[in-house]
Length: 444
Image (cartoon, rainbow, N blue to C red; front, side, top):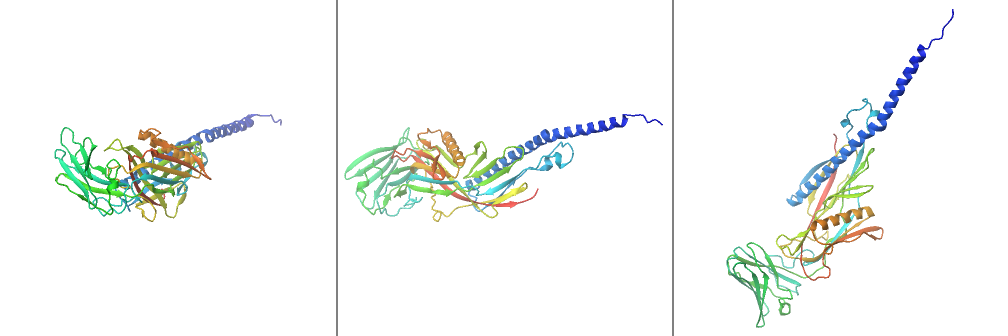
């Protein structure tokens, strides 16, 4: 029997191999292009979620100190990684054909940036020697001796006398109603009289500060110590009170090299660039390989005073971060960040709270940030430049220094005011808070 040669079986094998090859090519293309694209989309969406969570966190913490909600614990969720359950349109329902889940790490106080705030200011250790509505004897020569004038009816004439318990001088605060009601000061000393206009036009319910120790009044040489002030208020609509006297300048509002602390998310992306989000000193920052971006500015503002546009208002909300154990959590789960805002012990922490009363209390304010690496220092330089830009002031008035080496560290400084001027034209309002943070892992 003769056996003939047939190709049917060979063609079937070749066809099956070609089908397998086609499947392998499609799977390879899917793994090479589609899976990374899906993973990239997932990680971009996740970074957007993390950004929103940090922005929301800043808003929540700010609302605590704005509303004086100290010792109240708040809970904020943070998502560490991408959720593989959100992947759609997989080639087959197999892990091989799905993007690898990315994770991240949440760290409390994993950074070493420090801050310091100095001010040529009109208070010593944050407290006036004579607080408002209190009038103890003035024991030493004051650099400034403020009284506060206000009225509820500018149509009523005011004539208030201020005299010392010891010494031969009298100061009169006088208003003359008219189209504009000016506030004048008349000084009577050793039989001579000097008339000065403090405000060309006053308004109802506004507070005006008069510095009796200003050289323009010529009273300092007539002060005899100790003495107190006697103030007559003959009009029921007029109020004059001691606003305090000040004995020193050059105050460290926040001591140099005070740790700011931080809450930081460090991503571990597989398909997109890794990004670090940072909440520090009331601001939100984004750091990545090619630089840093300021998402939301910290609570430092420089503006013109709303009551007196000739004055500059500098507001500093000094929010530092303390930590509780655990301070580091990694993975891809949901983490609950528990935050409690507290008022620090001002004395033991050597801090100063500058409670301003509407008058200029400083002439130069200097903020100094020091970091371990130049990228962090450049991040704060950008922050200071944005603060200056938002202020509307020229670089001569709000000056940002270049980043300079400081041993193994890097320093950047923002100075507000004219260092060569002796004029007190800055209203400094500085408050301190401590955020105590605890990380608590949860599950989806």
